[in-house]
Image (tube, rainbow, N blue to C red):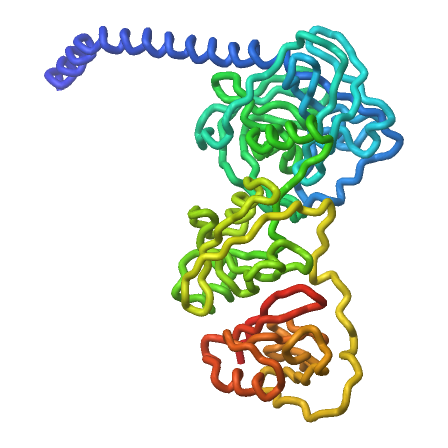
Length: 465
């Protein structure tokens, strides 16, 4: 026992200098980190502003799913008569980036910007973009401090993140955390492309529009959403997206986006598609093609599987969205496709995305098919589906769905009365005879893909008995 105690004491005495040296080193590192944090605040805070917008009515929160909140509410959780959010100066002559929901629909009632040095300026609205939830405002001033914009693509999960804003009307609050995740999507009810940076840096009501920064004091995001009044779940718009939107708002007062006019879903995002395409581990299926769009005037077809966009592999719908949004309006894009077991390439030219997009499923579908001469309906083939020939004058070639049995395979596939089936399992059909023959020759175990024209929208359905 004495020998063991002596050995322990001897080991501690020998290691003592090492422990002391480690303590000194750790203390020095702590001071360096402390100074680095303070340097971020000193660099960024002078270019952060408080944005106040007068309004006559509350701003609706109905557009967000339960649990998610914007950052401009008051301490009691209810909106006040003045929106107070944050923003940051991006040019020496007074352009300021903030959130669309901070400025809101009542921007014409007056916007006031307060700087860190106490100066106040009236601001004018330059442009708003509700799809990205970004806005640019401008104050009449010169030689203003500005932030340094970073690269949100280069930011990594686990790196330090810093937020500056005015939570609960406490201006220039500085909080520290890390980047918890990147590429968070489907957080809101919007159909627009979204990829948020997630952070646990404390952000609260009033932080909307404020910067999320890295350890170098570079802005990597625009703080936008929190979950249930902040439980370590905050979300910021990546600065690479915000930079592009801001530049367009300053130059044109609006944002022009490229699009193809297609509805898409990733194979790995849909179990039914995984069973229908067992040989494809990844890819994005063209679920529908809207009429009058760039895709509608190309050879792209509903049911095609997009494997690559300009040689970039894609597996999720947002992958395709990201690649197309990164193109210029009118730019040619090469898609690598899988169609009926064969891989091919197709070139389509992008168009400008309209300001308002409407889901094809919301378009009215005729309750009754057009009147025509009576003819025997096709057999239901265990699908609960009845089709009839179209009149010879019809501009669309195929067969029209005239009846759907409730609870049938056709009903489960989403077919509705008035749909025009143009192709069955890769075979064009121009009448009920061809339709029946194609159904009879199809692999029913795998399912049968039908190409459908629905009030001008090209889509598809998969029938399984």
